[in-house]
Structure formats: C-alpha cells, structure tokens
Image (cartoon, rainbow, N blue to C red; front, side, top):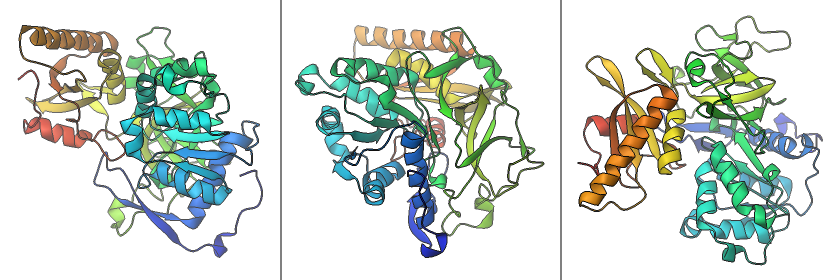
Length: 429
C-alpha cells in the first residue's frame, strides 16, 4: 500500500471468490475475482486514501464496518483489508446499524484511527437518528476517513452528515466519496469533500445532450468530483465509435488495469462483452486494450472525473436524454425518501413516471388527501422547473415498496414491470 513490491502474479492462484453483481440492471452475475485482483485493488485503495493524500496509515488503524460480507465493499473492507494490511477490525451486523444508526457513529468515536465505509443512505440515516446524548463525552476528531460509495453519492447528504457531527469535531475532509464496481474488484477512485469544493453544478439541458457546461444556478445538476486515478487507467469513451472523448464530453467510463476481473463465471461470450474491449486510435501512452466497459456515463472537466449515471438507466423522453438520478435527487429534496424515476411507453412515446415512498404514515380522511395532493403539486412543479419535464404519472407508495438490490440500488427494470402490471399499492388509489 505504500508503494512497495507486490507478490508476483505467478505465486498467486486463480479465482479467489465469485463476487455477484447487485443485479440493478440485469440478473446477478458472478464476477471472477482473482487473488491478484484483490491484492492489487487493496494497494490501489490504500494508495488513493493515504499515499496520494500525503497521509501515512498508522499502525493502529482500525476498520469499523457493519456492511454485509456478501457485498463487495463489505467483503473487501471488513474481511480482506484487515488480513492484507494487518489491521484491527471492529465489525458489527447490518441489523445492528439499522436498529440504531448511532451505534456506528459511537464506534467511530470510540475507536482510535477509525476507517470506515457506507452507502449514501447510511450517512442520511445516521445524521437523522443520532442524538447529542448518544455521543455524550465522545470525540470524532480521530476518524481517519469514511468512504461513501456503493450507490450514487449525494452532495447534500454528505454535507448534512458533516454539519450534524461538526460539534463533535468531525471535519469535512474525513468524508471520501468513492467510485467502484464489482468488475474492477471494488475500488476505482476517490475524491475529497468540502462544502465549498466538493461538488460542481452543471447545466442539466447541456448534460442531457452529452455536453458539459457549469451552471451557477441552484437548479443545476450537482455532481461530486473524483480524482482521475493513476492506476487503474481510466478513459472516457464514445460507446458507439470506441474512440476517446475530449474533456467536457459525456461518454462511457472505460478501465484498464490488473484490478479488472477476467470475466463472469460460466457466462457465454455474448454476455462477456464488457470485458476485453479495444480502443480505436488510442491517444499516445494509452493501451489499445483490453478495457472494461463499465456501463457508467461520465466526463472529465478541469482535470477531475464526474459520474453521471448508468447507460442502461438513461431515460429518453421526447428525444432528450435524462439521468434518473438527477430527477430522483430533485424529488428527494422535497420528500427525503426513496424515489424511482422511470420511463414507460404510452401511445408510442415514453412518459416519465415517478414512484415515491412516503415516510410518514398516511391515514384516511380529508387531511391525508390534502397532504398527498400537496406532495403531488410540489414534486411535479420541482421536476418541471429543474428538468423541463412533465410527469406522466406520480405514484405514492409505502416505505419498502420500490424494488431494490441487496445493496440498496433501485431495480428500475423491476419498477417498470411492477408499474405496467399495476402491482404498486398506491396510497392515493
């Protein structure tokens, strides 16, 4: 992790384990992770968080994790990192966190040089459910860092977490937004966070056209910035031509490096096409292949990487591209709950359907109807103002109704299927 020599590939056996993808856009698939992939990716992760940040990892670094071991981030952080780095591990169950999110924050405060990771929803839950009395007499000033990854990183959520625990000496630089995927073992790159420079707003209309233009307006799409990693090699590529995109142009994120897996377990060649891709006319110093096609859309701007969303999740409505995560972020500012933005074919065209889980209990009666109507009005106005879209249908449902993967990602294809088969139990029925 400090740049020293690694084990030669010939000394390591083949497949170490099968990491099943979350299945957010397809059926879960076993990614063949080798011992070499794991060793290299651990070194890349530690280099990004410590060496590249001019911070030395202390010998008493402690991994604090409640993430499930069947998830790639939970497995690598909670099991593999303590073994590979010789670090102490302070482990809990996901249920213990969900029952009482303050337990995680207390562990971070009580553990010297704590290093942890969690998806975006956990930062939101911890900020809302942890009281000052939960942390009485404790100090978060010794936390080395908390990775925010595994799902879209929302700038507002990170800042809310930082602000909530600032009184206990938590600082913004301790939060580390990160990007990765199972096909690259787990980790690709990380960013830094601060209220003034952690995210950049871009014009949503330009982004929908595949172009990049900063926006001063509060309605612009707020995207977290990440470092362009030295290892693995990362390029933004036109998915149709397999040529590199210029900075400021949205394309597919491609990766090349020893942390990239060999492929999917027992899958036919036509289902392995994301592995082994080849660049056309690569720029000087850029290998022709093999490349991993991540299926993620992103762009380079001012030397930083920005991630827009999944290619397969892209909504095309009235000839314009829209990123569902941006629409969902707009709605979440109003409802604070899980949202799924999907497109559904209606009379030979695509219409936007927004499914919203309402946290508060909805009783019957006139007051309940007024509240539902108010949510409908606020959401449709916000989507129209921020994205220039009309909402074809707005579906209000109870918590837990939106289908998700084991890691909490929205299963959009399943959402479309449920909607078309009228299987959502609507609160406003």
